[in-house]
Image (cartoon, rainbow, N blue to C red; front, side, top):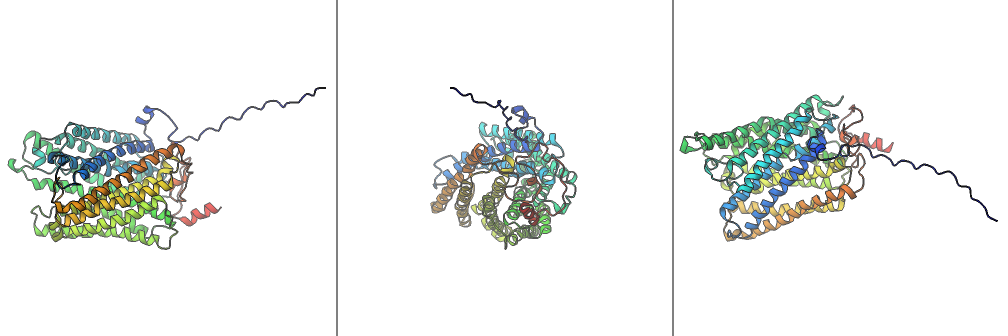
Length: 549
């Protein structure tokens, strides 16, 4: 006897859930990226381009430190060494440090942090990236064709006489300047005209204040270096006496024009990092930044004072003692707004609920290394000390404590902080902390010995040196190898995180600014509806109440 089993009719399978549309998956293909006007995609294009420039500049640094491991110039010739440190400076300064935070994090975050859908001029934003790439290609060509040996400062009269590829390199830097101008113009107009309802000036995140101050320097300073390089070209091509004394020119005039831009350019590199550190310290101590108004106005003060101190690079150029004393005094004054920031960050940490996550480690590193760089900057602002150590490794160490210890520490901190927002993925926290520690140790081992080398009289820009300097140079070269490992490590775990890391969620850090109020990664238009701002930018009591609710 058989029995039959009743079967229920087959149920149709539920369709798989559709992935949420974001700026990364809204369209695919090379064309959709190369023709995009989405500020977030343009930031990714900049991130790829600038990272390439960083590793090219780093390759030159490795070769420099290998050469300096021994007193004799037994790796490269003096001419090749001149080209190595010149190309290292040009790639690192003009093509990485100056555009890094504004072009990558600024492009991505400025509209998000002020509640806008995009920057004011989206097509101009895309054009700025293409201009950057064209400038980089000119400089790459000059490198492959034989390089340039003038130093990254292009000092005359040598730069108007050198038979290396000065013109191609200068054209690359000149073109790059227009990219900076377009970026700065876009940011200024966007911050003025596209803030969300209720987002008054004193409700802006401090990162926006720093980007605004940086944009002012872009707009006022970059045309000066552009005109200066054009004048070098005119002298080389037409034989017009502008800088070359053989032709009736004045080489000191070049230094005035160059440093009138290039000292404010130091603040182009450091101001954005200061803005990032303000965000990190507030988020990871769960407190508003102490003295918000002072920190905000100090960014503007740094931008203004930055245009008044260029003469401290020229204490040994023959300028009058009165001019030297005035520039020395102004150089001491520009330290005041920087000191205000460090003091206010320190007070913010006091009795805060400090979380020692990777971005915060970079913020701590920034504060320590930038403080050393700033204090040694005050030493160099004193005419008597400057004359003694001018042109030595003391200046190299000071400069790198500001630029690498400061600007790159801030950039790395910002990249780790906003990586979940950019990609929607976290990263392996253990590896990231290890990389931060390696970078901090490697940096100090690389550059702290250079203070001693410079004070003892070792001149920079020489590939041979006295044997008594070898121990400190070997320490510096060993530190550079450690530092290189620290910089390569994030490249691997960031790429790994794109596929394998856990989803981040909209606000993994419990932060309060507007970019964390939208999904990660953000949708193409940033916000489903325009946000209305009703409170202060760092109101953690309100955030905790929302989480508890």
